[in-house]
Length: 199
Image 1 (cartoon, helix red, strand yellow):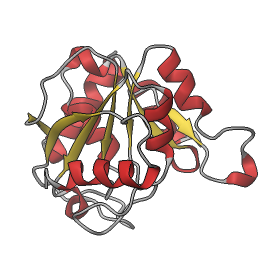
Image 2 (cartoon, one colour):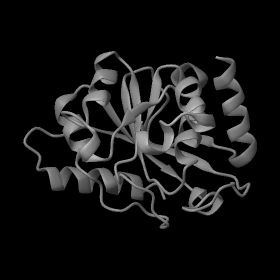
Image 3 (cartoon, one colour):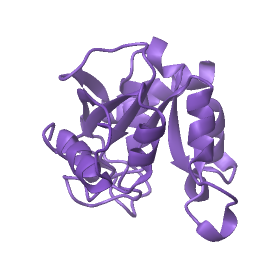
């Protein structure tokens, strides 16, 4: 708890991470928050922008190859925001790569994910990968909330070791759901558009 409080304070001091609820209101309903991805600070900024009561039940999905190797990053991921690790390297994982996410959802947790799969230098998100679609299909009662993080692609772009202090606003948009029978490409384009309209 102390680690989480200190982490939120540090993130807000560095980049602000102010939450603006535009398309929905904060809710204790189980949710998957999905956002654009341009910086290693994205995970921390979105998580810190949530109200304290929601942060305790919301777990960011983090790449094991970056966050899961001990040290300061591993400590922050494990003890700060209780990361759900995703193995991006197909050669090192067993079974369904989404299984850790499904385990967290089955336990009642909400998730933070970045459907692009990797960071981009652009202000607008790249095409979304299929993970969000599969989760939306398997968990139709979980609310999907579009989120846009602004300025972080300038605060700590790919390759940077230290962030440049800039004020980041985290915009929470409308809730989406997968429509029965909806094609994967159509759903993913609709989800991406929900993030883009917040930019």
